Structures are given as C-alpha cells and as structure tokens.
Amino acid sequence: MRRWKFWLGVFISLLFLYLALRGLHLADVWEDMRSAQYIWLLPGIAVYFVGVWVRAWRWHYLIRPVKRVSTATMFPIVAIGYMGNNIYPARAGEVLRAVVLKRRSGVPISASLATVIVERIFDGVVMLGFVFLNLPKLATLQGESGFVGDIQTLAMWGAGVFAAALLTFLWAAMFPQAAMRAGLWFVRHFTPGRWHTRVIATMTKFMDGLASLRSPWNALMVFFTSVIIWLLETGKYWFVMHAFPFQVDFFTLMLMNGIVNLATTLPSAPGYVGTFDAPGIAVLKAAGVAAPVAAAYTLVLHVALWVPITALGGYYLLREGLSVDESLQV
Image (cartoon, rainbow, N blue to C red):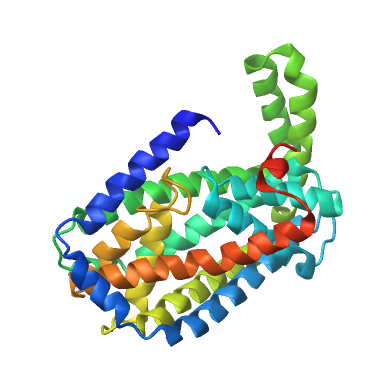
C-alpha cells in the first residue's frame, strides 16, 4: 500500500471520529454500553452469517460462467476477504479473496476481480435504494448533524455514479466485442507498448468475469440476492438495537445501514473506523435517540460486525497456510 493512502485514510477516520464523539460525555456512553443486554448480539451475529452465506452464493453465481465453484467453497474465501478488508486499508480483502480463489480453484485473478467489482456496484445500488426508499422519513428527521441535511444531495450524486458504473458494466457484458474494441483502443493509445500484451490478456480475462451479466435474468438474480444480503444485515442492526433502551422502526435502520455503508466507501483506517460510526450516530440522533445511547449502540454494532467475521476469516486463512502479506504479494 502506498504510504500516503494509508495516512489519508487515518486522517479521514480521525476526522469522522471527532465528528462522531464531539459533545458527548463518554462516561454516559460507557454506562449505556455497560448496561446493554449483550445476549441480543447472538441472534444478530447468526443472521449476519446467513447474509455472508448468501454473499458466497452470489459470488458462486457470478463466477459460474468462468468455472463452477460451490457455495461451500466460496464461503470461507468470502470470510477471508472480509477479514482482509477489516485489517488492511484500501479494501485489500477483495484482492485477497481473488488470490485465494485462484489458489484453490484456478480462477484467474482478473476474472475474479471483475465479479467483485460487479458485487460492489450492485451493493451500492441497493444501499442507494435503501436511502431513496426512506427519503420521506429522512425529510421528517430533525437533528443537529450536518450529515442528515446533506444526505439527499450525496444520494443524488451517488446514484449518478453507481448508475453510470452499472450501465457501463452491463453494456460491456452484453456487447463484449464492442467493449474489447474500446478497451484495445484505450490500451494502444494510453499505455506503453511493452505493457500491451499483459494488459490485453488481463482485460480478456476481466471480460470473462462479466459473463454472468449477459443474461437479464442473471442480472436480476444478482440484484435480488444483493437486496436479501442487505436486508439480513439490517436484521442484525435490529437485533442489536434490542440490547439498548431505544426503539426505532426497521425502515430507520435500513436508512442507517444505507448511509453508513455508502460512507464506508470513503478512504479510512482499516475497519472503517469513524466513517461507519459518525453517520450512524447522526442518523439515530436525528431519529430522536439520545446521543449517548446512539453512540453506545453504534460502537457496539461496529464491533459486532467487525470481530466475528474477522476472527472467522483469520481462522480460514490460517487453514490455507497463508498470511495476508504473502497472499497480497502473489
């Protein structure tokens, strides 16, 4: 990782942590955390892992035109990817799981990364859908945080970016020959000649990774499973909420889920420190939740999202006989 990118992420995380915790009495936050009923984390974690299994099924579905790999094989690799994202900056886990899949099943890394990018685009579309679905609720929220007032504008910009990306990938999948011609023109005009053979070979394998989108039915299935994945993750938010003395409806938690996950696309320190917490606390405060409770809940939720999947991914990586550093150097 380039050092400046790491420090940029750290700076953004510190800024968001400041925004999340300013004005709070940390003793009150600690008291709410201490008195929480942590038994509610267990069903939340269980629902979350069901969502991870659905992610593995979605990836199995996306990679199927390149090579048939079972969902059972994909699940530990997806967990390894989560672990990599949580402990390394710049979403290194996405590359990590592509490397492990190649090691296990011989799938080219560039084809795997194409499907990973497709996943991220569909995830972004669903997150924006969660926000747009709840725009009327968002308009009724009152709070001091600037996050809430800017969400509609950010959502509109995000919608444009993700829609453009999705349309580009669908076009490339439906018209691979035209996409290859465009790619070849770009390579020949904007890359050194000594790179052409390698870049073209990588681009060809990348196009193979988009094959699952050539059928409208397949694209619809990827979208449907993406919705299920994020509804299950919102289910974890709902279970963890019961550990704390407040109640908001499921749609508010969908809105929170959409906003915090869009925010985590920003550069940050490993584990999305700050970029997850500040917008989450802001949404709950705007929904009328007391600031210390909102902070305690969001911090506990963040830990509950981070620790179990990171531990499971680390276990699976050890079973592979690899370290993260070794994998990322492949």
